[in-house]
Image (cartoon, rainbow, N blue to C red; front, top):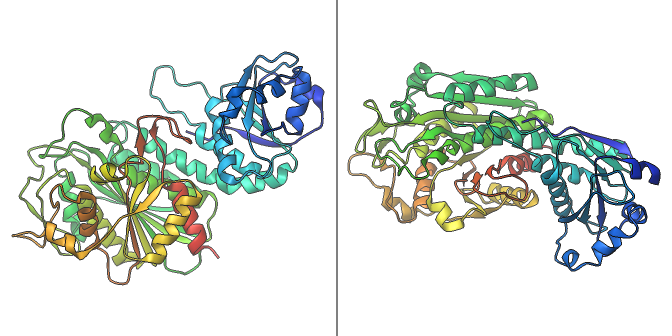
Length: 486
């Protein structure tokens, strides 16, 4: 979905124009109204002051607001009064923007931000939350334009540009993750990535014959029971000269039945989101291209569908990875790590990256451990891990470091192969990470993100309606900016 249209204009000290605005008007206050809110208070015969003195206002946190419908003395359909401290930090400003975006309708809004410092974060919050997705005969009506009236519109517009490019990447990810699997096939996913060539990304699609030649038999085994062909998509952004790239790796299981180890029917429809890791990588690459990042980054995603069929892999099969290690498939529903094993090895073999982050909706165990608030973070390198955790905190994308330890390797020992693909119910997210670590070359800084709990929510979050969240796009963009852009 495209971003809500947004313009930045010079805030004028014109009470008559404020009174005549026919759509929604957004003003700000804390313990006292700001300069524009005071003008609105006079127009409405003290309605703003009464709202601030009400018990309801005392319960409102920074970034939240009240709505005054059809205010007397104004042509506006509503005045949205949002609590915002005078020296609000970016997190409060983003939340205020999200409050505006959530309430946005087809008439749009006039955001009276003359007294707001950091209005670019308001714009970011609006863009992130003003997202809609539905495949209905009557699609949601498009939201109207948001006009941000501020002290220095040119400066705010310039400061907003990168934030809005990243928000566009978030929307792209949400669209991918929200799509039903009969629409977002492996082919359709690849085509949407190829379309990003218009942004300057280099995109290539590796088909099954080439994957077989490369030796990606772990990945191919996952998709062999589906009519949708398995693919690997490579996206490259070359904004940093001749330096070696940073690598983003994504699991792209466009639908996961569990294969022969079939899942319970209850809730299986949510497995449209099992390509969430690949969706985040695609969205992050779009964001980097959109803001013309001064870094070299390669995104590699493995696109497969895991179906039960006469050709599907079976429990007990042994497959050989691109690396050459053999894997005993104990459970065909632990398929994502087979996909990642091959594409992680491929990315290192071909691009020799300076570091690597993989993302996957990998285990239910991480949801048991961390719920839906934080992604699990596993790493072999403290500096890269700390950099990611800071980026996640700065962008309000929850993440928590989890352990890696050779002791867990005992759980994935196999009698007939180099390893098993699962180690039982105990420490399921940790053994999955230990499995993946075997496909990280010595000397490659690596972070594994298990995003099973954060990629898709059954209820609204601060910055997204229920469904796909786009978690990770902003954090990865912030990581690249901090560590790889001078």
